[in-house]
Image (cartoon, rainbow, N blue to C red; front, side, top):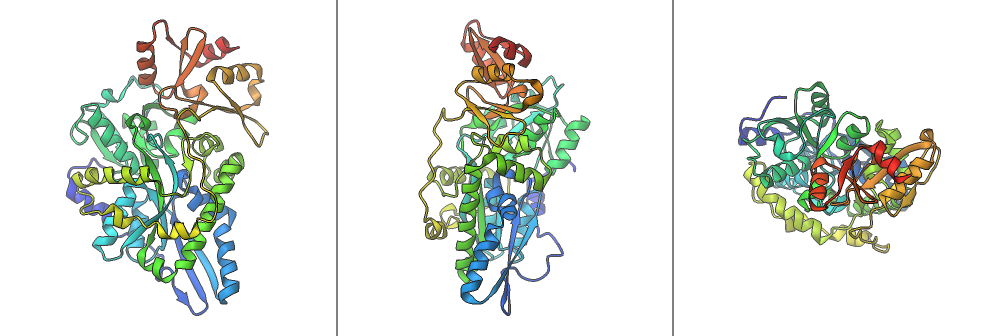
Length: 450
């Protein structure tokens, strides 16, 4: 991919419908057979309760089968997998996808494009969220000399324009005093292309959404440079539906949301099994999936259209308007709480409070993880275990609560205490505020805890 050179041509390119061999209209009723087409992103694992996990569990098909017994129709589900939200939007605006899941920035583009083409869509539920913004991360090569976001000035940075990760990059650069458009050499690339470019050394950093940063860190191909949670602004993924479909197939939409709730229950009750399932379906490392979707993962799964998330969505609009990607987006008109209200027959999920994130140890052959109140206790458990027994260990960042791999974190010894950080800049901030604190490597941290 080439570097972007202008806003309007880029916006036009992002919003052009994509030609595919989908065939016929979605939600079509062919005699006694109703076909429902769902667009999802299998590897964007913050959407699994409306995509990968939901599909593997078969809950939506079960709900539709029950409906078919009542009305005498046969319901078929067509699942269409994409790498980003843009092609899902393109297919929705031509009536070829009924239900889609995507991140907050793509959702707004979905709303704008639907309105523009007179194929309006509605946001009806959330899949996963992080109230501070930790789902998006900027990473660089393991051997890079870059230590903070400020070091990106004049550097090549890959992202997917119009994605949630692009939004994080824009905000982060602006906060660091760097012009998001001219202060870096931004390349518009698919996540997989950007990951390959990072490995090849043709870019300096990669700003992406789940699960790319965690996967690359787990595989030793990247290290975190910027934690999106530094913005302290919620990020989330959600479910969008064609308005025409909601009117014609309200019951089917109810079935989808009931199925999503069941998938959410499964993920929250059996997080290790859910991570293993998603890993099997996508080819992603289960350990990286669990980083985001685990019991204390970076993402919290809850379909509720929480006020904090809708408020954050409204704050995204000016950024996309400035980029020429949307105009005249009415968030309140786009959000439709009625379908979820009809489907909400179960108690609300508990809210995640600051400090609730625990350290976790995943031992090989186990279907559950062990939790620890402090990173030091986790390290002591690692020191006591056989090295071959440890599958993965996770620690929350001491400043943002963002979970990260213990052996990829930046460790600080502060007296007898040990603290973990996602990025070098976080560790530097902490050390600067605590006399005597010092950065130590992972092996030394384990030894100090033993």
